[in-house]
Image (tube, rainbow, N blue to C red):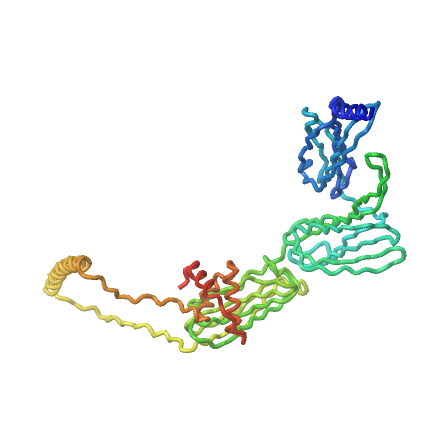
Length: 480
């Protein structure tokens, strides 16, 4: 009898193809943009080839899970699978039917609609987010502060939380403060701030910030039993609308700045580098400032990439020449928000003396005779005859020289008239630094060697250079 019972159960499981079906559902059917929805497929049947689903309505699947159960209905055993897919819909859509192979046959699910609503701030919720800008109308590049305030009830329960910052598309992010927390009556207040600046003119929108809060709930599993689960709920802030105006008088930079330029030396040897550091300090759109690299005739100028940290912009430049030269003033034009005027600030020129520089010789000036020379008719005839005779001899001499050149090339061993150019002395660190500077920003190995050279030349530190790597770099960029 025991064996007969087992046979009946197995037979019932094998005959579940009669009840094969695929039912699709989505929970919740209506979600707020930025929240996660769950798409489920309940598959009834024996052997199931689970479908591979990576996207739903054009959105990537964030997570999957599956459950299997066996139920007895009217003395028949039914095997079911529940496949769950989590995704974050960005807009309302209809999830098309999914094909599933059940017991060797293809079954299709039903289509399901999911509705996505715009994010709305709930001022009466347990968690309230607010975005408060210091100003909403400003110039392109003008800095402003965006304060983020979270108001949370003390008795609000939370197992976990996730904060999603706004998308600051169209803005420079200049800084972010650490959050501070205080208590006000029945609420806990958390504050943080962002330092921003608009990148372009027009109407710009800062999308809502999002806070996800996880709380514990109890729900029934597929067997009908209660089990603890974690449920996530999203809370949204308000949107912020900014109007950015173009700068007056065609200015490109806005703010209030100071500028300095410092040279590491004022007297050098020929072809030795002078390192100059340009520094701009102040509040404004430092990101829009271009390179300060000047053009100086007869001087090689190398500029490094601009570095911005906080309210300070720094750029390093190197100048190389074999004669005395002057580094012109570095200037910056900007619209000053305090004075409401376009202002220009400049550094002082820097005069560099090159020891042993060769002075340029004055050009030879030939003074022509102002009084024209009168020639007689006879003299003119003699001159013309002489010119004709000279032309004949010039032609003869040209062909004779050409013939002699061919003979020398064929029968005489070639002679080297020019000495071979000197190869680069890799022990000359100053010259080596000059040769490598142009490749510093595009090659990490070059940057490492340049840093060592600068350290060896301008500090007391002495570090050896990997000559094998150096030779490979010189060969790579054809440096000699």
